[in-house]
Amino acid sequence: MELNENRIGVLLADDAAIIRRAVTRLWEEEPRVKLLGEGENFSQVVSMAITLMPDVVLLALHMPDGHTFEPAFVKS
Image (cartoon, rainbow, N blue to C red; front, side, top):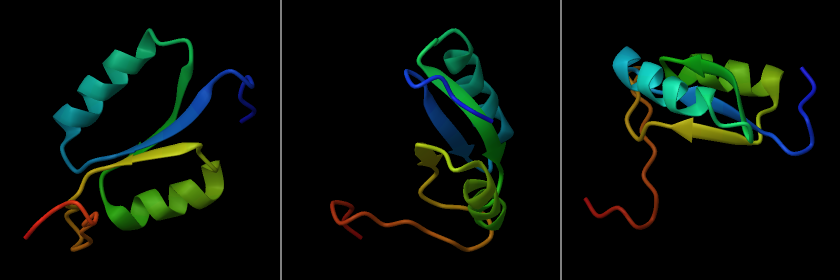
């Protein structure tokens, strides 16, 4: 899928379907964003990212298949 050079390709990753639907609805009207795909677990999203080559991956911090992303600014 080729993107208009002014559009940002986004891959959405969250295990909650309601969150994915809400974010998708927000982006439907945004001409600068193209939602390339969405996934519900980390493994699925990694596969999709390799195939789709998004500009941005919006990734939930805790995914259901045991993967957790902990940025440096998050204190345990």
